[in-house]
Image 1 (cartoon, rainbow, N blue to C red):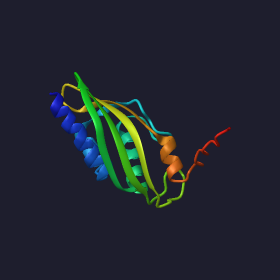
Image 2 (cartoon, helix red, strand yellow):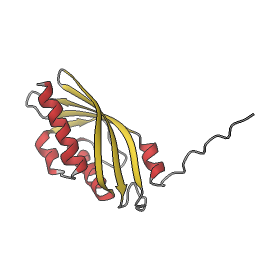
Image 3 (cartoon, rainbow, N blue to C red):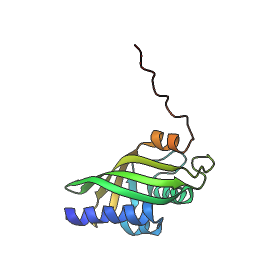
Length: 146
């Protein structure tokens, strides 16, 4: 079952986050999914996931995700990833910058007995993302002292 779950997760990354196919969320997630990582402004559950994925697709083009590590434990799949995208639409209230961004994240999906995602935990380097698109100032490089 673990290979099946890993393949499902890889397809979620490809279909939803890279291709913007939010309908795929309804095919692979339980309607009662427990989204433990809500993003500010989005509602919990499957509606929040659909909303965030839709917002992402409007704000970022050419999204690619490189899975750097992935493992399973019973009904859970943990995936470490690096995303690349171009900010071509408004994001988090900020105007588009047409800047490239690269950031990392970790996502854990838990599957129910029907093989659908029933729980999600996700953390990504939002700080780096926001710096790269110019939404927050870059951290200055410290000047060495002598």
